[in-house]
Amino acid sequence: MPSTLRHALMAIFFTLFMICTAHAAETSTGFYFDSPDGAHKLALGARYHGEATSVTQRPLQQGDLSWMLAYEYHEEIAFWQIALGYAPKSQTDKEARVLTPEINLIFKDGIYRLGVGGLMSHVSAEKSEWTDLHWQAIMGISIPLGPRISVDLYGYYLFHKWDEIAKGSDNALEASLFLALQF
Image (cartoon, rainbow, N blue to C red; front, side):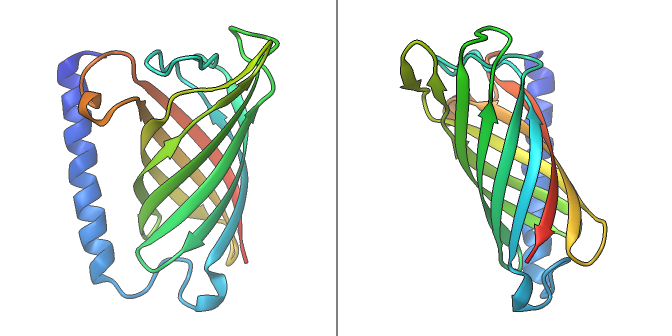
């Protein structure tokens, strides 16, 4: 990705992040959780991977899929998301199974979502090993299908180090789709 485009995307992300968090802090009611009864969500989904070459030992590349399970604890303006991804095989290493735990802090405003998170992958192949810690910027929407069910679509910008967020072509774009149940 050209550096000008990368800088423009990061500027847009930062601007939307600041607007969402400022607007969400002003509002007193959340989109889903107007009562304390619905502060939790459980979500199942899939994640489409890009190739993050800056993350060492990660066998996932462009086109690989992971199955995802996520738990979310919601407050008025934001929520914590703890997720686990499982990729039974990848295009580069058919024998490797990849488990990826992640934790994300996501701000919400209506249907819009914006946040950051950290993740590491455990690769089980001939020998098991953990990848380096890497980070993701998250942007998404949550479309309600009823009072307790939603479809959540997220886009991720994966990067290895915060000081290299806008430079280098080693970073990846990824996407996920979840079906979520509030309880």
